[in-house]
Length: 249
Image (cartoon, rainbow, N blue to C red; front, side):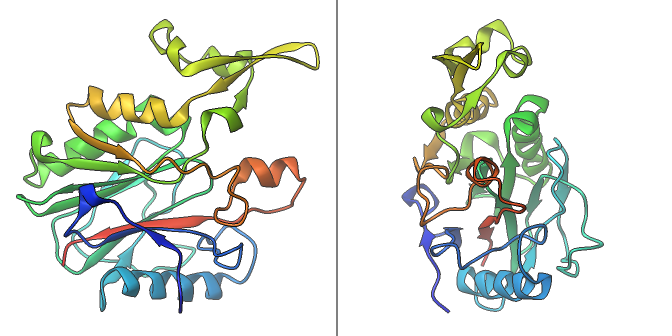
C-alpha cells in the first residue's frame, strides 16, 4: 500500500511520519466516514510502514490535556481505547499514533533517553496544557526537556482559521499576537487565529528549544489533507482524519 508520508530532519533516525489523505482515499479515524474495519486495517498498515512489525497505540481523543503513558498496546478498535490526547512511551516496538483534521499533531523525541511522544493539540487542548503535560510525562520516563525535539505536522493555518469574539475571549492579553484582524462578517468582527504559532509558543514556553513546523495547511491543501473546517463549510455530514506516528525501534 502506498502512503503519503512526510518526515522532518529534526526527527532523523527516529521512525516517524505525518500521513496525508491520498486525495481523500485514506481515512484513519474511527469517527469519520467509511467502515471502522477499513480504518483499522489502514492504521495497522500505516504503523507497519513506520516500523515493520510495530504495534499501534492510539488513544480515544477528546480535546483534553490528558496523557497516556504506554507500556503495552491495547486492541486498536473504536471502543475500549484509553481516553487521552497524547501518548508517550519508552518501550521499543510501540508505534504511537494521533489523528487530526485541522488540530495540530506534534511528535516528540528524546533520542538519548529513548523516549517518544505524540500529542493532539487543538486550541482547547493547547490552552489547557496538553503540550506541557506531554513533556512532563516524557520526563517521567527519563527524558530531559533540553534534549526533547518536537515537530508540528499539518495544521490549519492562520489565514484559514477565522474566529469570533467569544473564541478570542478565551485567551489572555499576552496571546493577542496570535490574532490578526479579519474585518467584519455578518455584522460581527472576526479574526484569524494562528494555531501553529500558538502551539510553537507553548512548546517553547515549556522549555523546548529544538522545535520545527512542517508548515502545511490542512484547510487549503484539499487533495492532501482532511479538514474539519473545510468539511463543515461544505455541509458534509462527516469528515476524515489523517494520522501521525512515531516509534522507538
